[in-house]
Image (cartoon, rainbow, N blue to C red; front, side, top):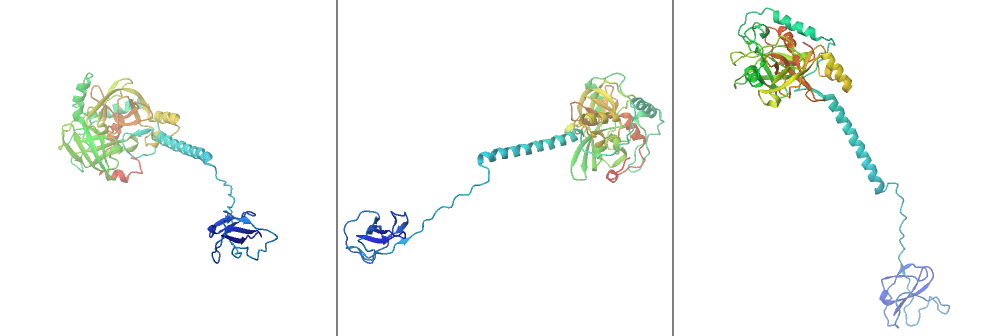
Length: 413
């Protein structure tokens, strides 16, 4: 049995009945046609698969062929043609990866440049946090420094008294105390430590922001006055002082400070601890002279390191050198006065050494360990004892609480 159909192109077609409901292609125009079901099914002669053209002049397409069903209009399914793909302007994957890699490389270079700039700004640092001040811009030579030390030595000392916390007399400075003297000869490192260590103190600070810090100091008179760095106690709300024998007490306040020299004189009740004043040198050490640094580096209490005096520097010289090497005002940017004089030493110091004494091999304090320039190796600096003498002589006879350091943060003492 077969089905007669007419294609929209005008071709008369014949399809086997087994293809009813299926799609077949018109041999003439290639249109896909669905073979319709006949009204009734009647036997027919065998048929060949596929569609046949029946365009014959003897056949009337409006009349059925013998033994076939009437012509049934086919069901046409329109041919769906795919729209042409649009060309994309996006770069191919082979092109985009090099671009991404280049962007990442540029970003890394910029990030590295920022880190290098920050490092250069911070290359000269204090051994712990402190505030900064402006400088006066005046230079003092080393001859002036020695003269100031001799003047402090010759100043008459008032009678020594035990300090009364909150109000007390100025007391006596060890510059003028003949009973507190160093050795007549240079000591071995072992003997030096044994002689100096009782004068060293460990300073633990609780700051306003709740953080804790460690610094160092030493007794400079028999009334419980301790010299340390200003930056050690600048943000303090509580200061605890400990000695090498394991005793400790609270320090209620300070009696003098100069931010530009990074020196502070703090006070404790001398009856609470075994107060052993450190001998004070009356001369600036010579370049190449052996010295030792005492303190609590990184919290390791009562440590000692040995070195030599690498140089005697004015603040102006250090400022100019750092500016020449780093092209930045690091020295004054850290708050140092350019007229402050410094001892450059090779004795290693770290955070926690701040405020500890730098001593000669006779056990006399020649300076106060203050800061290290991290742009090199063993570039360590200590303020001289002449600076300590200036700050000590400018002390007040009334104890000031530590919060006064905060109120004076924008001014200079």
